Structure formats: structure tokens, C-alpha cells
Amino acid sequence: MRVIIARSEQEKRLSCRLRFDTMCRDLGWISTQNYATPEERDEYDDGQSTAFLALDDSGDAIGTVRLILPGEIPLPIDRHFELYPREMIEALHGEMKYCVEVSRFIVPKNHAFKNHEITNMLYEAILKECMTIGVSHLLASVDYRFFRLQRILGFRFDEIGEPKFYMGSKTVPALVSRKTMACILASKKPVPIEDRAADKKPLAPA
Image (cartoon, rainbow, N blue to C red; front, side, top):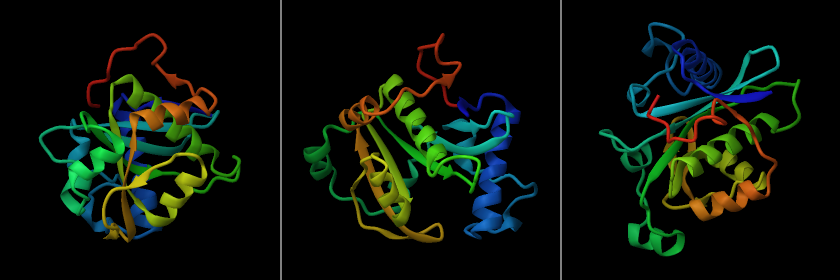
């Protein structure tokens, strides 16, 4: 298994198809009638996000996630949640200089891999990318069950606002600081991300 950054149009479509299969067909969080093709997309996919794909040894997509970057459209967590006062968050987690948001974390059931192995690989890959591009804080709005799982797996996000029903379930707005990201990565085995060894420059939005 390996994790790649989805650069080609084909790779980006693989990510969107996984999102459609899980969010629309399996969970019913979004109506399939919203899309002309079986690919779940939104306004952030047009130049304000970077998608990652987990691939098995045969090259089949087995998981995906994206990072939403700062841009013209406010981050989803700012649009849809009532967060604690910024000064309170920064007092606990440091100055929020450059924030991105993890989004569309999709890992379909796959009995060929150990429990949470794909989730671990994807999370380590996005944390590594966050460190590379100088992110100060990684934000997330996640299902409350996945929020608990993240912490059990060692990805220590902290709640930064009131949970609410959003995208089909009770959802928690959360954050992890750069300092905590560095500690998490130091405790994990290195995860290679394709195309990053020879290119250490920050990514442009995909």
C-alpha cells in the first residue's frame, strides 16, 4: 500500500468516485441526484484543495482524503460551526497563522488490510504534508465516532466548538496544532508520499 497526491485528472476522479460511493450510495448523506456522474464534488475541488489517494499493490484506490487550503471560499468549519472565541483557542493551541482543513476522509471497508491501517497511512501522509507546507493548525469537522477513533489511534485532535448535526451525523469541530502534529509524526513510522522525495516545495492547490 502507498499514498499518493492526486495530481492527474484520472487520480482526482478516483477520489471523487470513492467519495460518491461512500457518502451518497452507502451512507445517504448526500443525494445521488445532485450529481450527473457518480463523482462527489463541491466548490473546494476547483482549485482550493489537495486530494490524497491510498492505493493497494494493484493500484486500486482504497481510501481518500483532501486538504482544503485557504482561499476565496472560507473553510467549511468556519461556515458551518459555532467555534469557541479565537483568542481562547489560540491561548490553548498557539497563534492560528496558517490553517487548513482535513475533509472527505473516506476509507471503505477492506478486509485485505489490518484494522485502521489505511486510516493511519492517510492521516500520517496529510500530517507530513501539513508540516512540509508550513501549516500552523489542521482543522477538521468530524463524525463524533471518528473523532474518538482519531484520538484512540494517536491523532490527538481537540474540540474547538459546539458539536452539531451536520452531513448526516453528530459532528465535532476540532483542531490539532503544528507542535502536536510533530509529536504525532515522531511517534509513527515514516510514510512515503509519492513524488515528494525530490520535490520539497509547497504544493499549489490541486
